[in-house]
Image 1 (cartoon, protein in one colour):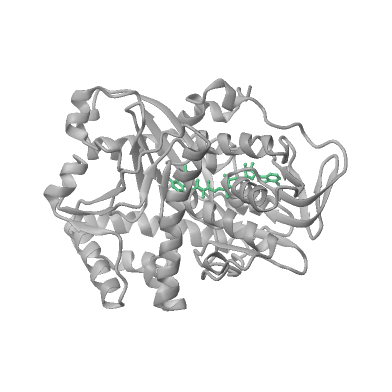
Image 2 (cartoon, rainbow, N blue to C red):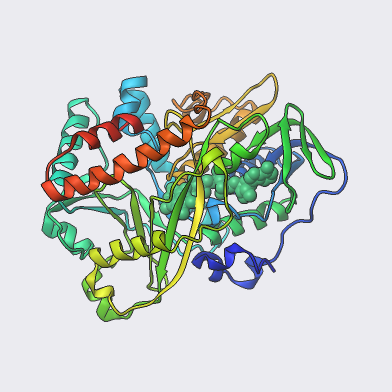
Length: 461
Ligand SMILES: Cc1cc2nc3c(=O)[nH]c(=O)nc-3n(C[C@H](O)[C@H](O)[C@H](O)COP(=O)(O)OP(=O)(O)OC[C@H]3O[C@@H](n4cnc5c(N)ncnc54)[C@H](O)[C@@H]3O)c2cc1C
């Protein structure tokens, strides 16, 4: 059983049935060979293995995982299986044109349904509820931003799936305070993220993949993954290490690790839900810039998270974020959204690491010469995007001419490296401070602020 680690604090791991908590593979102790070696057993690595097994049933696949499958963000996230991509449609249209942005949008929408389809096909219970996403505008500045974004995209010829809502329609979905309007996007399902990643891992192992847990890769090179005790040689080597990538030699400035933190309440009684709503389990947020996200769980809790934990100098990652102030802040935001929560207990608090590229772009690719592949940089939108990445990497490895996947604008995209320290720390800390203060100013004044526009420019929105 995987117990006694920081995963004990994570609601999703606490809820896992015994059969999904059992270790899935031994550490690597002897040199071995494979057709494809994948480093990282989160959604990216495991979806890649899943689709490779479908396309090439005889392929020998080795998965090298530093801890246990699902240890990273995949086992700790907010459970939004959404069609959001880290770069918004406007940036995609500006860089690649309207039809490429439309193709990316369609592929992301498909990814949500594909996750549900696979889970249904294999009878994985992942607490799936495709209730869409409701985002409340809780100030006039937020409402104006929603309307401006909608009008801007339509002027570019793009029809967004996100619909504008009146205050009443928003409140019917999400009984939050201070609502002046909102949006609804139907392309999102609430899921139990650890159930998905552990089912996926168990499935690929049962399908013949070799999963080596408790085996940190020391280096990722063409044709070889070196670990402490032994190496894996393979024609293709895939990096699927997301927020942890900076710890691998030679990849220090590729993606920076950023924390996102979550809290969860005890199961709430029907009288509380009468006020909170979320009846069809839509995922929810509001229009502030420092992202918050939540879902009503299958057992009637609120699981709620947000960014705001500081970036650690040198891209260091601590296994546990033991900062009570971060969790108190999240509890405070949730109680402000839903005052009915006063008097109910918070039972869980945890954090996880996500990966951010210098230009905020997610990317996927495979160098056909060296055989090195990668996917990541999803920021906080990796549940749906990693499924698309897995399908794309499988198509690239097989050399399959699947243009609907391999011609998408994020394929082969290279982001430039992050700055050296202390510039990286200074820039990210300043950006976090500017984002928080833009939210404070806009909520007080009700108007868009200069700081907010700076944040939009920095994050490509
Ligand atoms: C708190 C939180 C909430 C989030 N909420 C959402 C959400 O609601 N919706 C959404 O779309 N996205 C969300 N995200 C982002 C999403 O969870 C991630 O983008 C996604 O899970 C990334 O999957 P991955 O497989 O690429 O990375 P991970 O799941 O992080 O997996 C990487 C794996 O690589 C392993 N590894 C790292 N280094 C090595 C090494 N040297 N050797 C071997 N193995 C190694 C790690 O142990 C880990 O298991 C959230 C993230 C966090 C942290």
